Amino acid sequence: MSLPIVWTIAGSDSSGCSGVQADLKTFQYLGVHGCSIVTAVTSQNIDTFHSAQMVSKEQVRSQIETVLVNLPPKVIKIGMLGNVEIIKILTDFFQHYSGQVVLDPVLVSTSGKHLFSDNRGDYVVALKTLFPFIDILTPNLLEAGTILGRSIQSYEDIILAANELLSLGVKNVLIKGGHYSCDFFSQDYWTNGKESYWITSLRYFPGKYRGTGCTLASAIAACLALGYAIRDAIVLAKMFINQALRLADTTYAKNILVYAGWPETEMDLPYLTLQPMTTKPVAFPDCGDGVLGLYPIVDSVEWVKKLLPLGVKTIQLRIKDKRGSALEKAIQCGIQLAKQYNAKLFINDYWELAIQYNAYGVHLGQEDLASADIQYIRQAGLRLGISTHCYYEVARAHAYAPSYIACGPIFPTQSKTMDFSPQGIKNLQRWRRTLNYPLVAIGGINLNNISAVRQTNVDGIAMISAITQAENFVVATKKLLASFCH
View 1 (cartoon, rainbow, N blue to C red):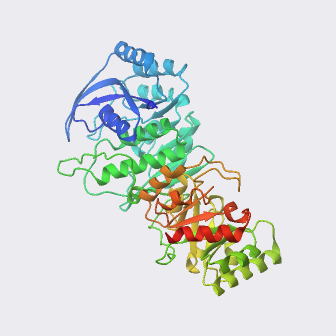
View 2 (tube, one colour):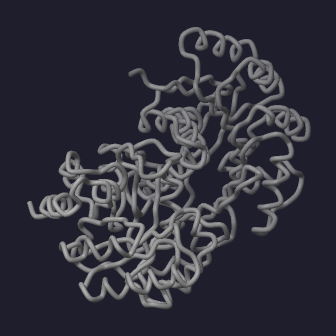
View 3 (tube, one colour):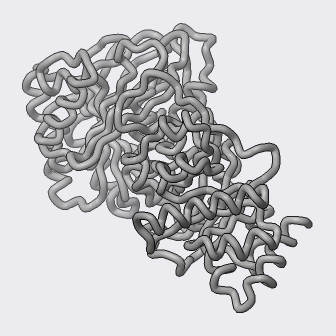
């Protein structure tokens, strides 16, 4: 299969630390084919921006027309444009372009030099004409302030600025918080006008880093080209830049990012929250030294009664057809049964009843996280499991430091309607390499494929229909349990 094509339209950096050089390195490491439309040739080294020579509008147009012939882009990343004439070329081009566009509105170099040749006011006005074509705008605080004509000093200012930028026509805004005066965290803010979240990572010290904005924007573009949704692309891009920062060469006056392929380290995974973070999350209790093993998910206490005597030691009670006293009685009975058999019972959704009757743990879906009192569950000493289906949801779960993370669907499943495509064994292996949390695989797993799932070294395997819809659930359960003994 041919690689997705991504263009970078930006300036050339002779030091190789930013601009098209940083973009092309990012594209290569993330597995897309990068093409470059050079708008300016700059003379830079590690710590000095010496000069910039703008490429003529004729040459920029020629580059676009030539590359377009047989290397049409799926996504375009825009960096330094330099003058109003080049902006006009792009606005004309975008009239007939149907792909996605990421704009990193670089206005000033790391060393403080303006990256445009026109009057600042004229350049910013022209830049805004691109906004209706932009899928995601990625300014830092200074750039957002320059575009809007005011300073941004607080988290409230960031939210207001993002909404105002949306009103100018862009579809998504990611305001980078690296310049915000917070010693411990670097917090970015994303919104599309309907949803919003904060993306938080630990800061790296000491010194300054070249090319971080270029790298982040080009990583977003690469991930969009690979088919990731915008929220997942942002999380992946943050992981990629966090990895490059963590591995940076710090022997120079300004630190040089070191690129190292697809990010698969939990320490690079950002926290994703609805509000800015002030402290790292407190971890939930773990599930003990042993693996979670076979993990049936059942919809009634009757199934709990059937499965625990067979040797099942981890089980989830997900009741959907009861309310009021009937629901409370079923949950109370299930918890009592689990304690009788020394089993780990997770109550799905009904965290208040789980706390009231001292369940082993609670399992929450993504849609339940906003309404649940997570701190209350933590203080009660219960374990917490969280469902995830994509990078965005994993980053959201990471912000709660749960007892385990469930990942799925691994295979096609008929147990419930899913908005997500099956992950497959390859992606499950990637999640296992990435996450240090106990990992539970779920979705379409049965006797025919459980061996392949187990070989990924997940800590638990959740099942529904393979047990509850089996011709003989006793035989099926015993065979599934036996598969954990080899």
